[in-house]
Image 1 (spheres, rainbow, N blue to C red):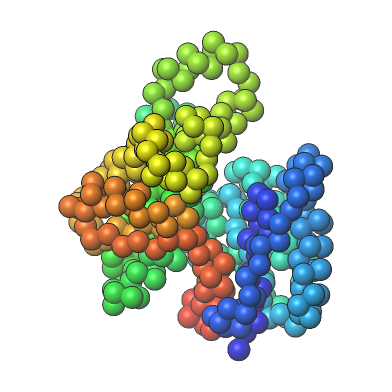
Image 2 (cartoon, rainbow, N blue to C red):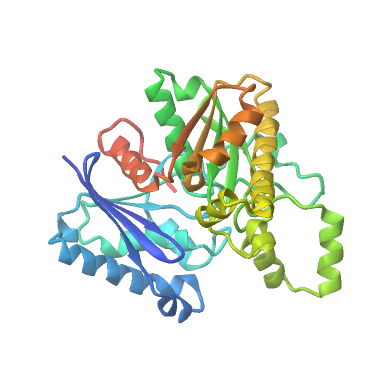
Length: 354
């Protein structure tokens, strides 16, 4: 039996899960107060604060880090990597510490937290399916403007796990399947999976459907005119597109649960915006079906927003003709991390080198 601690850093919390093999002992979100986060100028500066919170919580649970067999952390937007479970090594640590990553994101802290919690050489340390999983065919990288390349950055961890879960539950082989997998969260990812590879996906910060906070694809000439007229700098543009865009830009509220209550009370404007988001998700699913040349075994919908049947029903109505649709609500990232580590610990999968 392997004792495993999974670590998933988020914007306002560090979520940890303690497992014995695949049996959950506990999952806990260690919340950070706003003043704890705001005092740091850079994400990397939060490291010691987050490590200390994890250590204090484990102490309360009478769990010594020394007795843990493996630490497994969410991987961030590192360099492009194939899907799999990677050992945390010096090269990975150095890349994060030196900023040699595709983006400054809190998920980059995962491997550093795992490294800090390690107390002996025999303990294993992993990341699984990082944000930067890249299995694109070359044709998918072409953007339409020379000098700008489409990049594979996504909710790969959850989507890969859901695809493998669907295959297992339906007696199918993920590595012989054609799937469209959708993650509905703060950002929305719609991906095409062919024979075990995620061959295309929208980078939620750049393109695809709008989401609670992100604009997705926009009319580019109108966007250019707005930026010039408002004399915006890069940080202002980035904030507008990835934090204050999407649903928030229309309704000044990005809480989908609250908005659905308003919709059900008769707010037609809220209903229109929520429906438009699902309309765009459905369009992206249609686009990914062409990537798979119309041969789609299933459409899998996951993420926090997938708990809302009134929204997933819209997707089913618009895309059910493409393939059967399966709903897997929630983000499932802690379990995905644990299962990835277990596959290596049990010899079912090769450990990959960063």
